[in-house]
Image (tube, rainbow, N blue to C red; front, side, top):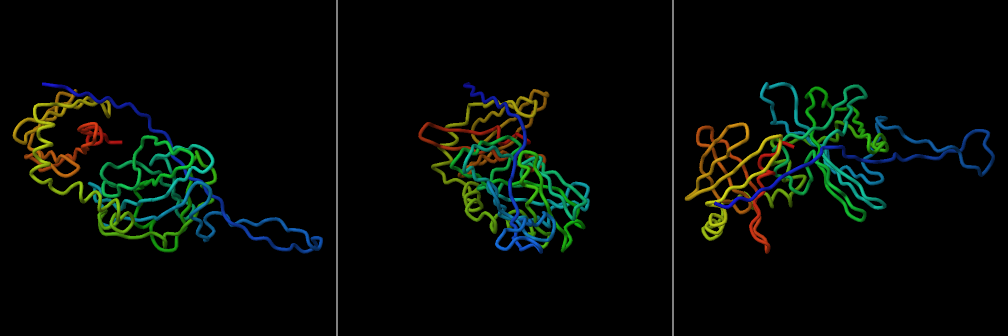
Length: 295
């Protein structure tokens, strides 16, 4: 039996956004004729919508009205979508530690919640840092859990990120939030190309592709180290799998081949782990890190 090992080491730092507000120039009383008066800028949270400046352009703010946590609390999952453009210097991006303040009082920090952006594949969503090199851009998603009452109409929204002080100048309103019934409806509206790509990857593979993938995985196992735990994923004929961990746990079930994923389903619970794969000119790549990483 052959063994393919993938070790994953990463450090979650911070991402950032930047912006600056617009201003108007007026003639001050007593100023010399023809002289420019001091520039007046509109502070964030004053009611003016400021969504783009410098490296950052906010694409949308949305909420999944159908989402509930295990405790059925008043919290709702709120999404911030933006684009980072590295025009003059290399930048870095991730999906955590961005702050959203509502009505100048309650501040929420973005966190990574696995599975919440699975159908928005055009957007980078991870607590791990991604380089945005000069001359390129990257779409990024952040997620926040915010009480429903704080999302009521007419409330101001401001942003902050210690990597980008200019982000303090970005401002929106809760009236700008788009509401959706489920993340798939959100993805279809905000990221239609990414949504369609994910639907295709999750569609059941035809018999020829299924047989090709089975020949690549049956009789082999893959190992990775994530979340301070070693995972070992093994496949064997006809469509069986087993997951073993360094914690001494193991679970087994059956798998099905999709166009871009292997769906590993545990029979006792019906829970499915979606393991991404690619078939390239270099061979077959199974990304079990993406399947088991919680970051």
